Image (cartoon, rainbow, N blue to C red):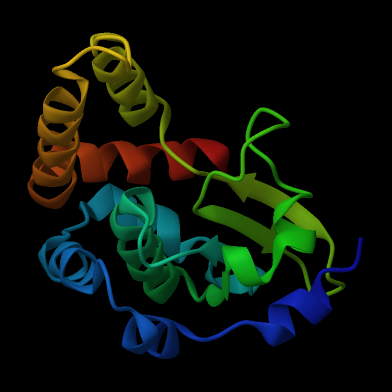
Length: 182
């Protein structure tokens, strides 16, 4: 599949952030607080000559996007990668080509393409360690019919928000997983 048309249709980072109405503050907080190690920077610098481009399927209501988009944007700035953003629900034809586990429209999805518009790698929606933590927490919830399900679910999602916006180890896991993919 030639992905150049999808890439050309996408927004740049500034336009995407300006369009946000839900999790913009979280995204900008991570963007501003994120720090790379010297090893990270050397790794990202090695990507510069490749002139990579990336289509990002996202949505501003998504907590995982609020975590990963600013990290990948900062990586892109260090690596000379051009990111273009497409809103998931406005681009289901493309989204349905990148379902998580073949069934879920989980986002964000980072689809890296070469100059010919061919996919070179895909990342998302979460790093393995963050996925493990979320799965573990969700499995501890009671059945949805339990009277305390809603309260416990709210508490869990509040913990996720706090952790993804304040824990540099979560951010580092995303960075390391991207580096592993390379």
